[in-house]
Amino acid sequence: MHRCWLGLVLLFLTLTSSSARASSFEFVVNAQSQHDYGHQLTLPPTFGAGEFTLELWVLPDSSFPVGPTGGGAAQLTNWADADNAPYSFGSWWYDGNFLLDGHNNASFAAGTFSLQFYGGGRVRWLFGDGTNAGPGGHWSVGAYPATATASLLDGGWHQITLVRRWSGVADAQLELWVDGTLVATETSSSRTNMRQYWDSWTGFPALQEGWFWGAEKQAAIGVLSQYEDYKGLLDEVRFWDRAKSASEIATSWNAAVSGLEPGLVGHFAFSEGAGTSACDGLSPTACIVWFLTGPTAWSANNAPLVGGVGSFIRGDFNCDGVVDVSDPIAILGSLFLGAAACCQQAGDVIGDGNVDVADPVALLGYLFATGPPPAMPFPLCGSSGCFGGACP
Image (cartoon, rainbow, N blue to C red; front, side, top):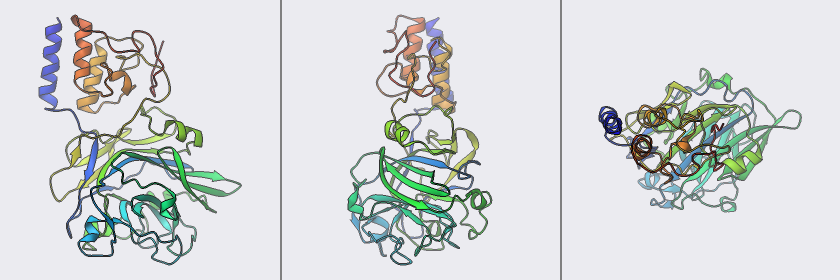
């Protein structure tokens, strides 16, 4: 019997993929007039209507130098060293590597949502909610001077959280968090429903509608020949239609999600591993489409997520309280077909910190042969942490 199941596993692997899926997307250095980027035209429909949270993981490539980005070859290779005081003059924010360019270049205040690296590896959020924020046209949420916070060019993964939270009677507090620590805030006097800009991108210049990941949008479409851009990995982009609490961010900034969390309305896990798009696990027809000048650049280096809160039984991947043959099938479906995972950590049968093909094979070996049991917690519930875990 166990040989039959192992044979089915091998057949499954042959028909679906020759290797495990990669888990992040890599942006590389670009050439003049040749910019790789990801275009996201559709945002989750309730994101931005009221309070919101956006989360993402980045691993910027620290092998590139920090320096001026005013033009020439250095503009393509350097991380911007500029650290101009926000609102000090109209073009104060022009120097900065775009991780995300959601600018409305017809009116910076009307619908802009962008992320830039500046000041030698720091990150700032530029946000236009229709309010007159002063010179530059939009709000800036980032450390000034840049040296007030640590550079992210340290060779490691970092998690970024952006929050719009209602404050007082009619204000909105804009927050930038890095690795669970509050870095900067700004206060807007407006609680604008951002869907007036984002539903149809009204007022955005032609061909510049939507969000452009990894590049400045005018350089991406050829309006400009070059602009400083992002170089490195991107993973785990999550959209929430609520403002996550400060304690929630501080304690679970690096936690995995199941897709069932209240307020989670979009989740791009970048688990495709191949092809020219990355799609929302909660709405699979909503995708970031990659426009590439070379081969697709998927990376097996993934964000270092850990379990969240809750209890689980290792091996009970479908969270039905029983470890049986349906669980290795569910793990394989998640790995190779993109099926939703109720409890990702439960799929780490071996307990080595990864979920890969070795785990369903090990579980089948335990169920049908003489293989060892799953790692703890098993067979009883444990509280090592898992969002979406279910225990009887």
